[in-house]
Length: 453
Image 1 (cartoon, rainbow, N blue to C red):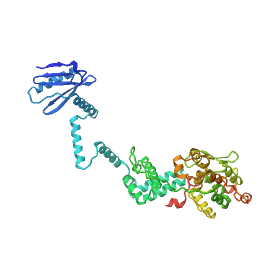
Image 2 (cartoon, one colour):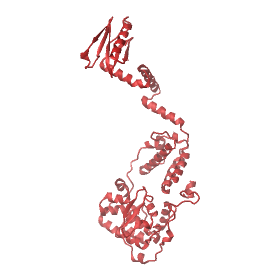
Image 3 (cartoon, rainbow, N blue to C red):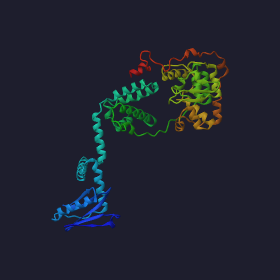
Image 4 (cartoon, helix red, strand yellow):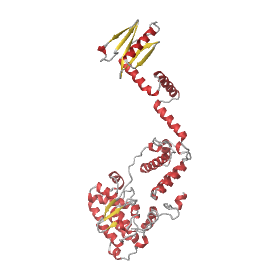
């Protein structure tokens, strides 16, 4: 009834490798790879495709189909090689899912209709991702924003983070908690950015809030209060343009006035900040054992450095002259308190009496600007100060001539200061167990007013 027309010359071309013909109809056979073949034809106005495990099985199946179509109830036509390849790809892609091509198309059309009726232009992948995320949210325990803030602050204390860092997070998140009364899971990027606009957070301050929120929301995700394996809403807050603030420094005459008018107990604090560039918190944690005046260097250990990296800072000749009258084998370099912030408060009281206008972070800024004018190397000064070149130019550098810089590092103690009565006694600043801890809890001791806030 039917005959098989083999076309070996077409095997290496794009098209059917064989055509099985019958009465008034024929079915092409295409190579599907790995010995398998595909039969492609039209029946009842629809394109049909049948996959067979071998050429012989394909021939047999084609003859069976032709027998079913000899009545003339369906029209069969040859499909192109491109159409056959596309059909083969679709069937192969759906096979692992156990879904037929017709079922996949029907489901796709229905889903697109639902999205269109809802006025949504999202793709099915986006819609599916959103559905999974919302399903996960329903399984996450509900936690109020304020509750997670308290857990976060307690965790910072437990891990021994500095009071300054804890205090900054406490202030920023405590302020946010007054606005966000609901659950942390319900807060979106739009909510956070709108609130930052309300409090008029701009530039670096806005970016600092973004950093705090990012760390806080990451903590909440680790605790299981936000979906895992997904970016948090805080990470999508837009970075603000940070042009930096006006950099101000002390000139040589001002540094001289400050050092000669301060009480003895604060002289090492200012001298190290102005002539070695250490941060105020680092100086507050510094001990005389960390300073080697004979070899001319200061060792800032990891637990005393802001970033947790050990570094060695050179002692300039004039700094050595200022420290020698006060140097001891042990003990704190300056008056020591439970927290770095307390040290700054007490120093501010003494500084007022000098009559010099205070400059924010002025000692560190002054060191950076004058030191760079002499060594001409951002990398070297940045290494001494433990800061990156980008932050160096953004936060610390003010243009200074080499002549002024030499005068700055030429500021020395006068005879009155050298010969005056030495009131700075090592025993007054003997180091306690570091860091200061509460005997009852063996945890970092925070001010009662801060804990109550």
